[in-house]
Length: 278
Length: 293
Image 1 (tube, chains in turn red, purple):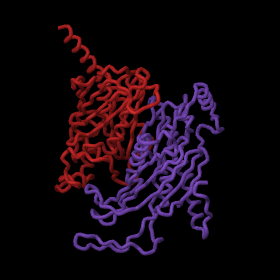
Image 2: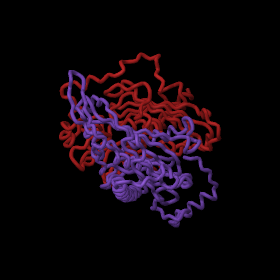
Image 3: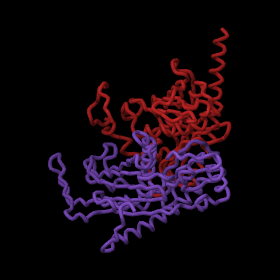
Image 4: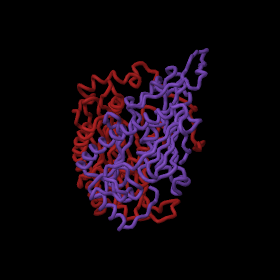
């Protein structure tokens, strides 16, 4: 991979200082477990989603854009006009989505590099798969729509926020779609299910406490009007019963967030019309 | 994937075959094609395996090297998966063509092996925070005839089962430097615990039904496919939808049951095959087959 020497490079190897702080939660993951099992830090119920803020048309120069906040998780997305697929000789019947998912360098506890790492590439692909079924791709053959998602601040559920955000931005860019996509994530630790986990709860869910304990994260994206799951992504280790249980909860939450996204779009349409009337 | 061109009539033929539970190669919906497995075929690798699933051919080599552990996980070793979709398999993979598929497979493998219950990276630690083993799992796709995920995972699990990690005899800290002494006997090695490692199962939806082990032609007809990573004990390590298309939540829940069921059977079959291969290798003069038969 060619290095980018126009940017000021940090030292070759550096490690975040928080690893050396006393009471470091990365080293001692299990200390917070008993607290989480009884109640959550932000006094939410276990099946309660964080408050959602949605806004479209935040980037004036993009064809369509959206901004999503799940409390401290903040995601911005821009969608640009369809253009011909670069470096492609043969004709493709369906239009393509080109998704780039990126964490801002300062968005996480540790610094992220400017270039996409493996995790970001994986999330880009997940995002693409989540949006593809919702877009009428036959309407723009041989063209691609560019979707750029930037996570400004990550406090858990960034993929879910990114999918919701990109779905709204696509609609805002007047890309023909079958339906809106909304997404939600859920953490599993033991027999506890945590809806929309924050980052601390996410790292708790990634480590098993004792042998044969269910643990992991699930993200589900749903087209609300058609009740179609467009993407499901699970990591960790859990029983099939646990996954299908989580799936029902997640579908329910996605259906609940669907009207919020709709209202956001309606509001942007009303605003544009009233602006034109003036 | 491999750029198979099918006409509408051919697609309908395959669809009708799946509906009546008789696919065009005579299999039922939940049958695998014959699988060939060979262990220990690359001399320079610490562990290697080759899996041939009808027309899909995968070669995996594991190399062990010494590395410094990550500062946030001082007592864990490292493992990395690299997939090389070579242009040997299909001209589509030429240049950067296979890159997307390669990242998809390697990332999915990484997330399926991420749980410490499947692969305990602490066993790869030499000195906490100073030195650890790093396993490079290199996957070479030689031929691509559909169902790449399953074939790759079988080969990876087999290669990891076959991997011999050299035994460290003495470790001395000399000032800030580490002085490692490895055993002089090249056969003085230990092996990884692969019991809880997962296998991947891909279910493709054609019409109203899910099928396992789809051929390249069937993949072309499928609207949606799900990849499950299932362990021996029937636990799900990872799940992802990999193709265009969406599913109803009920269909998904049904697919879950089928996927886990198939995964457990696949794990069992692989374990038996591995035991058979081990016995063959332990025999005085193991019968040598051609590298690529």
